[in-house]
Length: 579
Length: 30
Image 1 (cartoon, rainbow over the protein chains, first blue to last red):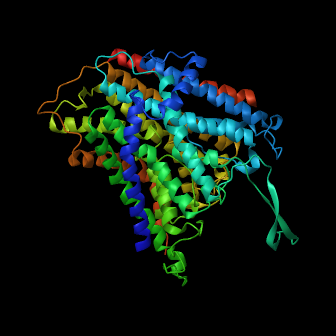
Image 2: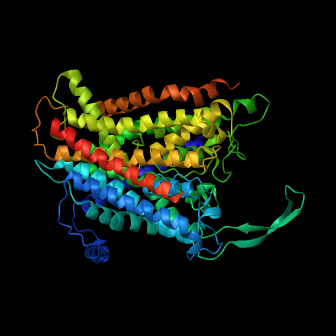
Image 3: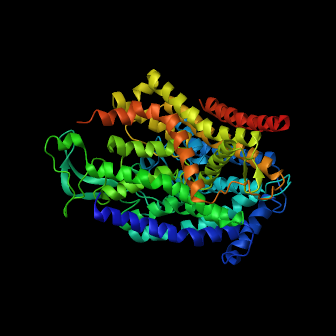
């Protein structure tokens, strides 16, 4: 690691932690319905939305009604995006006259964006019209993130309400999250990105002369290049803030029109963790004990920071295979050093390692470097961060409700070990809560391991692998880890736009999102119906460093026991094979 | 092929609605 790199990481965490409290407090006020300064502007729009949609904002929902609303809303979203993709050749805002996508790609993309995964089996600039990108994908970027926050709010109400039959109103949570949090932040970030050079236009792609003509593969001289443009900034802002991750262009945030400068790279990397980290403080505010929120944030950092250091140091150390043949990979005033394969020179090692770690910790899935080209240990970190269940920050809303499932497990196990009745925030945790929390933890793990096995056994699965051996296995394992945990980043190397992978990945994304949300809402309904148990000497404190350590250990042990055997066949064996 | 993939979408969402019913039944039993 270099002093420059460590300084950049320190600045990153300092800025992030400074923003957690103000944004977390603002979101708490929004979700509690208290007046906020944006209310004068947004309030009339909010009321009009309810009127047009026929929503009664004061009407409460049981957990089953809430879950049904989540599913119906997402079913409509999936169908709408599917139809848009299949009909885009007939629709306007398509200056490149791009035709319909294949049915399997339409299924994959529709499920991908509705589930907040944003796995992309396509290249944006060669496949999708401006209308599809804006009306289909960008809209889903907003509402899928808002739906994640809504489910979190329902779970929080489960903890805070006493003997209640309802957990809130999904439509109100969805609208308020979108209008008061996601839209304003995205608007500001989009302007910042435009100021840095991110494109935002409806013009057709531009043909420009090359500064220096090249020779093509066929030996012919190439003097002109087609530059893809489009309404990118408005999509890219929410892509990071909403932990969506789907790029406007194929190479995502490595494209100079998506992230042109070191500053734009820093800002978008920051925005990936911003809402998820701030929601910890929001949680503390909503349960009237901010120490609980800080404890959850601390547990996330306890896992995240060592993994970031491992990824960064592995990439900075470079590739031993190149060192053994005399290649100089040391950092100097003129070179970032380290393993620069697959990385943008304008970002270098530390920004690429930080981005790879945040994007996989935060369930974002955007990339500014190709993870396939990372060293084996550098590539192991993003893979494992996803496999932990996208709870170390995780997706907007979904990360924290996933973390709270681990809290349920940690409190339950601790209770059994010391002979206490397990309780969290005054709610007794019993067999039903454990069953639901176990479902949330086990479903993605089962999908990842089972589907990876199918991928490496089936002929259609093996046909998509670019590399043989351990690296090829890593490509398939990464793809299903990404899909089932709703991350969406691609390792690279895997040809995924085939009916086999499009369909299997779509099923994995679906299971990793909606089956989990149903279980979380069932748990919320069960908790809301319970009475509040007064604190006693036997209550396990859940805001102490001891509990932070216990929670982190629970997450790491579950993640290690479940996935180390699979990782041993991929990145670990690849690392051991290095000179 | 559209009908196949749209049927799959309905099947998947149907399974999620089935899970709501299952979770409710498990809760009622416990």
